[in-house]
Image (cartoon, rainbow, N blue to C red; front, side, top):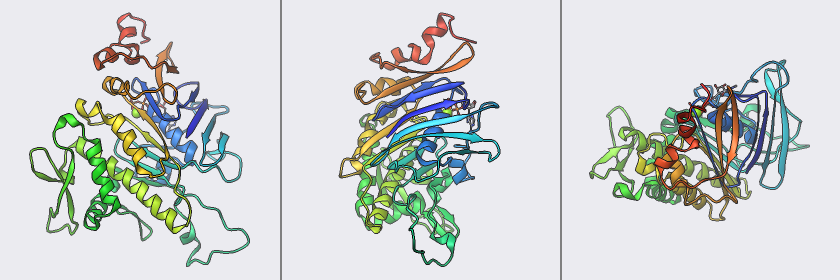
Length: 383
Ligand SMILES: Nc1ncnc2c1ncn2[C@@H]1O[C@H](COP(=O)(O)OP(=O)(O)OP(=O)(O)O)[C@@H](O)[C@H]1O
Ligand SMILES: [Mg+2]
């Protein structure tokens, strides 16, 4: 679980410290104040990888640079699977990189990042974390082949079509995996069906469910999954609406990451992880209000259901939506959850952890200080 991030001379605020809740974390603030930036830093703190460094084909998750000349540091702390990692990393202009102490960092568990544009990143303790054997050599056809990937980062298109790297498929992609899972009718498919149903808001008719596989072109050999729409048509997933695509990609990504983690742990004869962290940027992206009303709750319970061992789950989400905040009211527990708000005061970005007020509805959230309406109306907001 990510516990703390402290920044000095990095990002839009001159300095910033954030102590995360162990379960649900909501991050609000105007455009451009550093919400996505904080998720990038959070993913990096736990994995030591910037998403766009792992996959230069994505437009989000760029390596972070210091805000100005002089010392710049990122201090972070997370509770790993067995130990707590406390670390300070400094930027070295000579290296154009962040550096820190040598040695094997703590294992942070399964770390997932759903970016706002549909790119996804996974850091899997079974597949991206290993000990170099001491005193003996691994015989592999070539040295590079014995290295495992540093992390898995997929562009929006690769989430659907898969990613091939140096002759091996890092991920088959949603289309092929979904079709394969459906034919196999095993755990992965059951989980996907469960997730799709769980993530559908009850008010919008029958739950999202897979229809039969189909073909959409004589030139595309792939069996194409379909999604059964409430108007009783089976729509090929590539033709689904933006919201449906966002939700099915999220469901696929969670199932893929967990299934591949389990499979790898079995092959390595190691234990499944006991913690899962999901960073999700703009959790409401593309969703109609009725969907926004349920997504936080359903996503948290879907994540908890992944592991039979009841792995601890931490969700760190940014939002622009008063509805998301209103919908979080029944699930928000101040003992485990936190709400952070980024504000601009006297031309300086400040982060504050706010007590979670209960406003009762989205309208009241919209006109509250959280969305800066009250301060703006009173003429107190900075220009
Ligand atoms: N890679 C980076 N290196 C250094 N600073 C960055 C980097 N990425 C973002 N920033 C800083 O963070 C600021 C805020 O960007 P960010 O994308 O986090 O805003 P946001 O709050 O997510 O806004 P929006 O609501 O529009 O998505 C940028 O203006 C820039 O100052
Ligand atoms: Mg953003």
